[in-house]
Image (cartoon, rainbow, N blue to C red; front, top):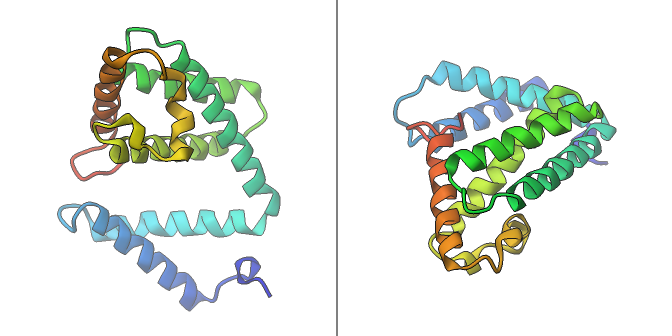
Length: 177
């Protein structure tokens, strides 16, 4: 039997929340922050996950929203000529989210989750690529292939812009703004 579709016991639910709260604290290096706030945020996350797990169509719908968000984001970045900077990246996320919302196919919460997932993917790709564009993973490569062939000067500006966006997108504790 598939345990994903089972409703967890209160003990398992408690453990899931406890683990999620721990990882929140670990992400910021166990310094600063508020353990109660970590717990409450973890509780909200776990409850949302469990509710989505009860609706098999929700995951597919959310993936569709994410793929559409990714497509719109790439399309907007493709139009970024020489004016690539951290604000351009931020605006691309905002415009992609706005365009997805205007379609009316997805509820705002689904669009927000898709946007968060895309931001996490971009941030992870930026962290992995370091100074070398050819080191990004195959999955992440699709996000930035639109800039291939634009020359090393442009790629250097894009690299700086992406790192600037990551810096602006995270607060001092590494939490997404």
